Image 1 (tube, rainbow, N blue to C red):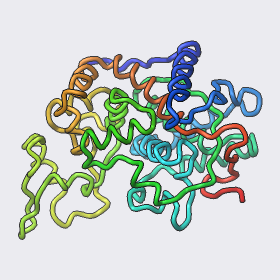
Image 2 (image 1 turned 135 degrees about the vertical axis):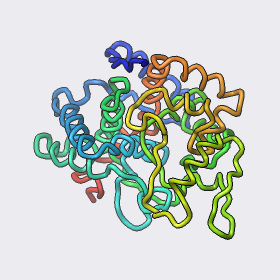
Image 3 (image 1 turned 90 degrees about the vertical axis):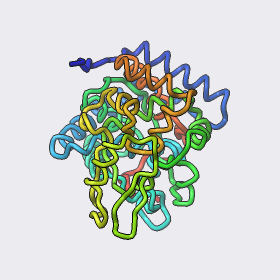
Image 4 (image 1 turned 120 degrees about the vertical axis):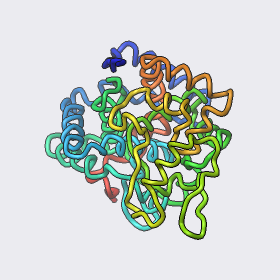
Length: 335
């Protein structure tokens, strides 16, 4: 059995990566990162912040094993719309959170719980955006992935609009070109796209997220129409998601190790058992197929790539300095 080593990236390594990310952002106005982020941002103002967040995530995950996957997905949906500014956490009519594409998001209580504790010990100091980024980072480590350091100093956004959601997030039916266009607009490469798709090694999806790969007949039986999907796996999916199944039914993204952050997702793709069409296209195109093979064959390579790509993801469009605010509660702006 392949071991899943904990990889701890030292400060010097992360500083080099952060410098690289900032350099890329300087070259690309589509990724307005900021050098105001730092690895010791809360060293004096709230030194316990990372411990509080990690303990909150761990307790929640012990009670509900689906939490890590939900937190990781929540960060993606936040950072791809308005940047990593916790705008997805805001409640209200017309907010990002109200868009149908975000209705199935979860993990909000975990962020709220960590925020309440931090408001006691470090009032009006730690942003919800930083809490979310740290929580997603910890979700990976808690489920067996690499332990990495990420800089903090993000501030919370005041704008959250549902109309900004659909043009900026990946749909499970997207082609490689459609996904690449969005990733490129965020300053992310094709390698980042493949590596960050590895987030699907944990988490689950509702049946409706992949049933477009099947056709229903008048009797309610499903027939596979996407020939890129393994037939035996397709039959398994139709049994788990029969006609009339509850809208709350979910299927693990990774059918083999759904609760462990590992490189098995890429092995699943090579076996033509990617749950989504957007997964399957990664092995159908020569621009990404070699990367899938490389990550499937070497977990350490995946973990190294994850550390770099996650740093870039969590730095998209951050607000720092006088931009944005530090919310008192994550679900509402201060004003």
